[in-house]
Image 1 (cartoon, rainbow, N blue to C red):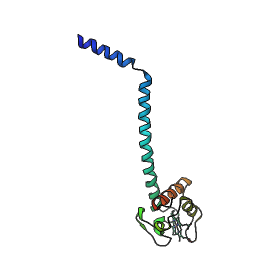
Image 2 (cartoon, protein in one colour):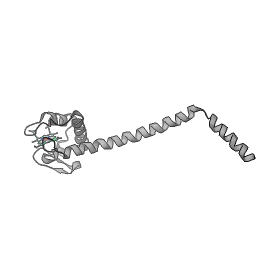
Image 3 (cartoon, helix red, strand yellow):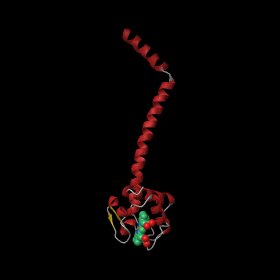
Image 4 (cartoon, rainbow, N blue to C red):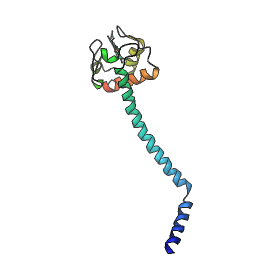
Amino acid sequence: MAVSMRSILMQSVVRRRPVGRRSRAAAACLLFLAGGSALAAEANDAEAGRALFLKGTTAPACAVCHTLADAGAAGTIGPNLDELKPDAGRVAQAVRNGIGVMPAFDALSDADVQALAKYVSEVTGGQ
Ligand code: HEC
């Protein structure tokens, strides 16, 4: 009898718990999830950049012509990117317009070019 009274009391306490507290907890939980997915998105960016570097489109893959340690690429036709350390703008410019015998990569979307530029500049320390 005492136990059931207690559980009834508990239930009413639980039911009367202010909604604000629960939604605040939910908000904190969402923030935590958002933080986690931001990290995951960053890892995905690097993955996407690396995949693009290794993949040919209408032009051969970057890896055919360039050395880039992070991608396991050892091409020697173009400059060694680990040594050149291009910044993102320089990579995007070369990929968009071509330079010397390097063709322009017209088949890549702007998002692809950005991902490649960010990836190459970050892994080479070119910023
Ligand atoms: C057919 C071979 C070839 C391919 C494929 C190629 N490159 Fe190049 N790349 C070159 C050559 C050669 C140069 C040097 C051009 C010059 O300075 O005349 C160069 C230069 C560059 C430069 C330096 C540009 C500058 O401002 O000096 C970057 C950055 C670069 N390439 C990135 C890439 C990326 C990223 C890809 C893939 C989307 C790629 N390259 C694909 C041959 C290639």
